[in-house]
Structures are given as structure tokens and as C-alpha cells.
Picture 1 (cartoon, rainbow, N blue to C red):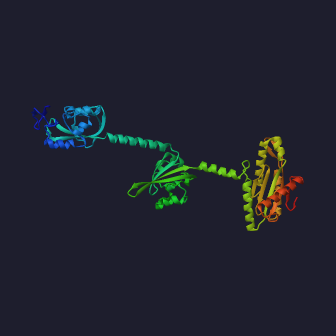
Picture 2: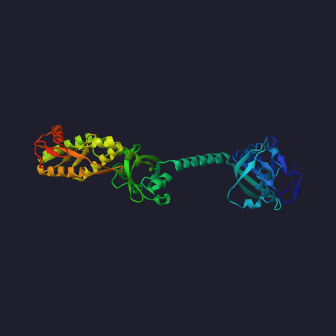
Picture 3: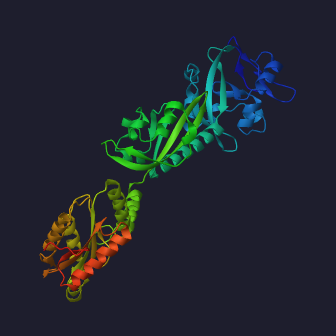
Length: 449
């Protein structure tokens, strides 16, 4: 038993009483059994203190502070169970806390040494205790699990944020109208725009107008056919330049008819360039960049179809370089490569953009002259080619001299198929070589020289 002051301020010999089960109740409590049952069934710690000393604690408080029974707690200063900062404050004055409507976040230390995160509120019980020694009710809500869950959530969010910070794909979050709510650093870098500038804008600022009907349809009508599909689209940077991307869109249902979408974009510029390079090399000569034999055959076939439709004349030249083998043998293949690239450039300079120059062999070239008109026109071009190719070519400090033997076949006079026309031009080229080289000749035997 402890001495205390009655409601009139006088001293009483017995300020508390024992229930049948030994539970201690302060004398100031009214209907003991009723209040005991009510407080013991409360989910938070409840204790009554006078002068900072515990005079009563409920069953949940006994459990929370890991005590065997209330006797282990009654008679001890409540500040003993608080961390050092709050313990010192409790030793001084509880009244200051009783006037604060906000909960106080602090840690309590149980009897076994474990620390418990709680929110605490303190109430002054007017009418109980004396003016000099008022009674306070302390309520503590155990939030340890909440704190633990919040910390785990914070760590998980931090981990996700770190992942988003390092991921190379652009991630854009927008609402159901397409208004941007968030972008990750990769998106900032990819589009050349800050997160602050992007948020609040419509996601269409990142897409080329009318570039992807399905994407626009998703925002305008909610058509979900695009969701989950890997699609290619053309994106737009802040400076207006465009680039190809792969995009995947996922939708999040936020309930109550609200939805949000997450777009993941990958810049595929390099992959497209590599693909284009592979496509180019599949149809072009790696050294000169001219169409190779495969593309030449296709171009000749298409040119004959067009010429047949227009009823126009087409000329095919088959060109074999003279004295090229000597350059390779004496100066080496590096010099030979320089000569071949120079020949390709000079041939292109002597024909129209609509014509085709191809390299079909080591030192063999072909020229398709579309809609050539009279055979004199083809003859003039052949003369120009011979003139430009006989001009010395510098290769590694040496002057290289080559010539050209050119066989010319005309459509439709000489042949009306690609293979037939090529055979005529090839055969004519060999006739030029046999006749002394560095000249041209038509398949029908004409030569304007």
C-alpha cells in the first residue's frame, strides 16, 4: 500500500485496494469492478499516475511491458519505462503533456529490456486526486508492428526507387487521360526533359503525331488491344528530333473506374542502324557501296518492267577494267581497293540519279541506263566513262592507269529479258577486249568512235 491524498487533499492511510485476484486498484477509482473490466478489455496500455508514479495499470499494459502481474509495475515511476529524454520530462511535470491534443511518439522499454514503439496521450483526471497531486491517465498504443511494416515498406520503396534509377528503359506513368504523373531518370535522359517539366504534360509530347494509331486510340477510347504488346513507334525528343523505340504499355486499375498506365520504352536506334547496315551489306558491295549482283539483278528486272510499260528504250553496259590485274600484282590489293573505290565514284558521277551502277565482280561493273532514248545517248555516256577512267588514279603515292572495255546491249532490240540482255552486254564486252580494249561497242556492232 502507498500513501496518497484524498479528493479533499487530506492524507489517507490506504490509498489503494486489492481485488479478489490481487489486482491493485487506486482508491480514487469509482465502480471498481466495472472500471476494471472495462479497462482490462481495452486494447491499449492504460495506467493512472500520481506524481509520475504508477498507481494502476490495465491487463494490456502488463502484457505490453512484459510484467508477470501489475505488482511489478505499480509504485514505479512511469518515466522508468521511457527513453532517457522523455523519462527526464516525466520526472518533472505531466501537466504540460496533458494539454497537448496530439499523440506523442516515443519508445517504452519493457521489463525484459525490449523497446516498444508507441503513441502516447496523457489526460488529467479532474475531480480525482488533489489540486496538489492530480491524477493522470496515460494511454499508449503499441505501433511497433506498424513501424516495422512502414520500415519494410520504406525499404522496399527505396529498393524499387534504386532499381528505377539504374534501369536503362524509360518508364512513364500517366493517368487515364494520358497526363504524365512520373518519369524515371532514363526517360529524362532519353527525351532530354526534366521530370519537373514533363509531369502534368500529356504523354503525346513524347510521340510523333499520328505515329501510332493504336496508342492514340488507347487514350481516346480506352481500347485495350495495345496493352501488353511489344510495339515499335517513333518517339520525339524535347529538341524535336525523332528516334525509334519499342514500347510496352501496362494498365493499373485503381478502383472506382480510375485507371493508370505505365509505359516502358527502349531506344532501338542502334539496333535499327545495325539492322539497316546488315540489310545494306546484303544488297551492296562492302568496298564500294554500290549495289551488288543480287540487287543489280533485281534493279534490272524492275527497270525492264517499267521500260516495257512505258515502251521506252533501256541500255545495259557491262564494264571490265583494263590493266587492273597489273595494279594488284605490282602495288598490292590495298592500292587495288583504292582504284576500285575511285572507279565507282567516277562512274556514279557520269550517270543520272535514276540510273544504276553496280559492281558484279572483282573488276567488273554494270550500268543500267533507264529511258536512254537514241543509242547515241548511250554512246556519249560510254565515251564519258572511258575518258574519266583513263585519267590517272592516285593510290598510295603511285599513279595508277586503267582503262575500260564496255559492251552495250539495248532493250528491246537486243533482248527483252534480264538474263538475255546481260548475256548480250557481256559477250559484247569480250569483243571489245579482243579488239584492243579501252573502247565500247553495241551488241549490234555499232560503234560511234
